[in-house]
Length: 315
Image 1: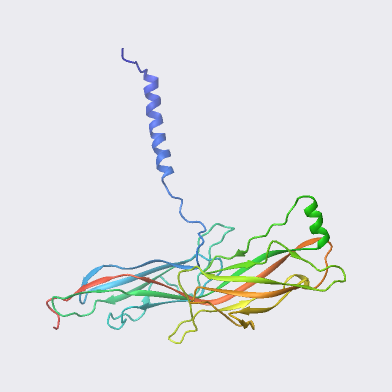
Image 2 (image 1 turned 90 degrees about the vertical axis):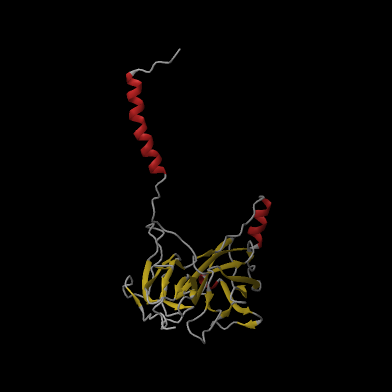
C-alpha cells in the first residue's frame, strides 16, 4: 500500500528545501580576513602574467607580500635576483605600492589582518637564437628590518615558603616564555623556581639560558654583498626593582658586550647569563624578564618563465 502525502506536508517540504540550501551554502563560505599570525613578512605571490612567451613580448612580474608578525616591518625592500634586470628591460617596480617602506602588523585586539603590499615589475622577454627555448627562474628577495620581543615570568621563593608549599603537597610550575610572532623565536630556561637569599645571607647566583631560533625560513642578514650575516642585536631591559640582577652573559664562549649575537649557521644561538638575587623576600614573587632582538632579515621566492626565440630574431 502506497503512503499518502497530504498537500500540507508537500508544501512544508518545498519550504524547507530552500532553507537547507542556504544553510549548506553558508556553511561552505569562508569569512575571510581577520588577524593571521606567522613568521614576520611572508611572500603571498610572486608570479608572471604569462608562464610562456616569445622574445620581445611584454610580461609583468607581480609581487604580493604581507606582514604576519606582531611588530611593524621597516625598510621593506624587494629586489629581483636570478635574472639580469637589464636583459629584461626592468628599471623599477610600478603600481600597487604607495611609497611607504613599512608594513603594519595584524591587530589581535581588533582582529584585523596585517598590511598587504603589492608591487608590479614591467619587463620584456629577452632575445634568443631563432627556434630555441630557454626557461628563466626570476627570484624576489625581500629585505626588511624587524624586532622580536620576549618575556618570561621567573618565580622567586625563599626557603620557608618553599617548605610550606611542600608540606601542603603543592608545587611551583614554570611559566612559558612569551615570544612575539616573527622570524626569530626566543625561549628562556630558568627552571621552575629560583630560591632567594635568606635574611642576612649572601646573594645567590644561578644561570639562565636564552635560546634564539630562526623560524622564519629566511636569513638574518643586512642587504648588500658585504652584508653582516647572522648577527642579531640583543638587549635585556632592566628587570624588576633591582631584585633580580642579570649580567655576565656569554655567547659562543666569549663575553657578550650588548652589541650582537651570531646565530650558528644562521639558525640558532644560546646566550647564558648569570642572575643574582640581591635582596631577601617575604615569601614568593614573580619577576618579569624582558628580551629584545633587533635584526635585518630577508626571504626569497622564485617563479619561472619560458621564452622562445621567434623567426624575426637576430640569430
